[in-house]
Amino acid sequence: MDLRGRVALVTGSTAGLGYEIACALGQAGANVALNYSNDEARGNRALQNYLATGGKGAMFRADVTDPVAIEGLVDRIESSLGAVDVLVLNATPSQPQRALEDYQWEEVQTLLDAFIKSPFLLSQRVVAHMKAQSWGRIIQIGSEVFEDGASNFSAYVAAKGGQTGLNRSLSKELAPWGITVNMVSPGWIPVERHAGIGAEEKAAYLSTVPMGRWGTPTDIASAVTFFASDHAGFVTGANLHVNGGRSLV
Image 1 (cartoon, one colour):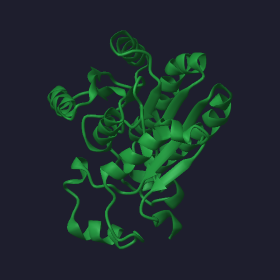
Image 2 (cartoon, one colour):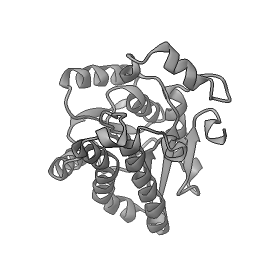
Image 3 (cartoon, one colour):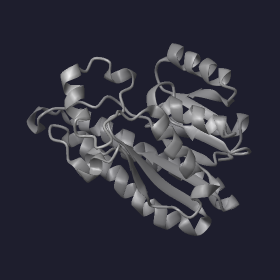
Image 4 (cartoon, one colour):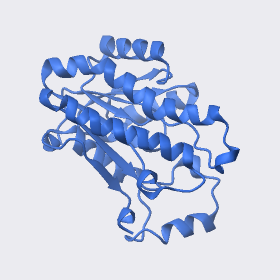
């Protein structure tokens, strides 16, 4: 899958799925804008590791839920790498699991901002270039939880549901310009932020995966790279579940 000559922005890409996605796009030839919001040291380490793989690109600090920061982010990417051809909406905040009555609205709003406000504003900012060249890729990182309806997770599930709706609507709206809008919905992929989760909880989840193994960040990155490529030029509005068949259970 050849992405040479394309510029890709991957939000939240200093660790976990985002970092692996950035590396996969870089290996395919894209010039990648990696992004972080808070941890400068981790951002610097991630960039050095990324460049060591042979990838091209740069790191950009920005809170991608802030409209002013989004404008500045895209301006800086355009100045240093070029206009964004591939937008991967991966950034995520913490994901509290609570009973309905125990949520604070601020927690819910944070998730809505991450999964609806940020994808909407970023897509809005980069779409003019995509329309002008009659080519673009918007790829959202969703979650199996929307279909699963996970309990004690209503804020996250609701926000992911809104993101899924945005994906469906934008795919139809932007199709006439050759812009595809797709979603990759992972199952539980253990990454750094899951380090504190116990073996019993992990075993319980794994027992529900028909393929009988854990998914990896590379599984997700491969799906995103496909959607970013010309091989997926006639695929839009899709929500690809990468969870070992768990959505069929």
